[in-house]
Length: 254
Image 1: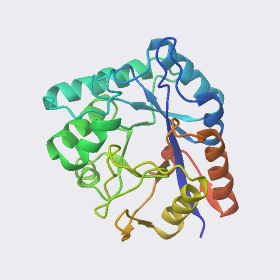
Image 2 (image 1 turned 90 degrees about the vertical axis):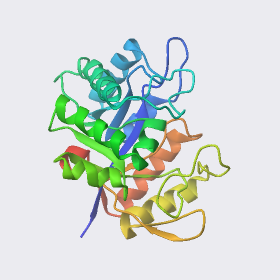
Image 3 (image 1 turned 60 degrees about the vertical axis):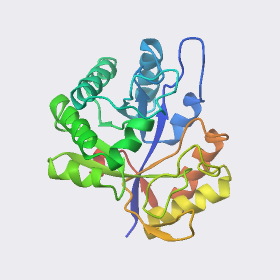
């Protein structure tokens, strides 16, 4: 039986005159786009452009909300009241959905520190889930595979997709290695492809400690700001197809 995977990428992370990533090339190889909503990157014009680009290539759209942290690119931990987090996510998702032709989004994937903190913070995880359910109960949450966050979302009746990362190293507990540590981002294309295929086909990934970690993968993320992301996304898509792995948007998987 062939495997199925969604291929997602963070996009729309340019700001004003500053351009980040090669969205117009990477988007041709993915099935779901996580679009920055102005809190860590992106602005109204870049959001509009990214939505138009995704719709041009029939790529499913999702919000990529963040803490209000433009200077830190949303990668700095913050201690924000759960009610404020909930409101911020609804605010960002609402802004993005307004640019879409159908006024709807497929999913929400929190960005950076918000995502990583939600893995180990049940209150934050719950606030994120509440925001999604209030905004649109049919939307999908993208959350780290194997985390308590996934269980919380499922217990709340939320559609949730388990996410793995093509270009990120993991610890033995399945969490992502902090970007402040050497080797947290994998740059070797052959290693990225080999690890990705193994996660999808075998359901395992080798941690930085050398242990095999079991993973369930509904969606795999490649970061658009990873060096060589265009060629890497193309190669990864080709390898999935060669390996009889069907690439479909999340809405057709969960």
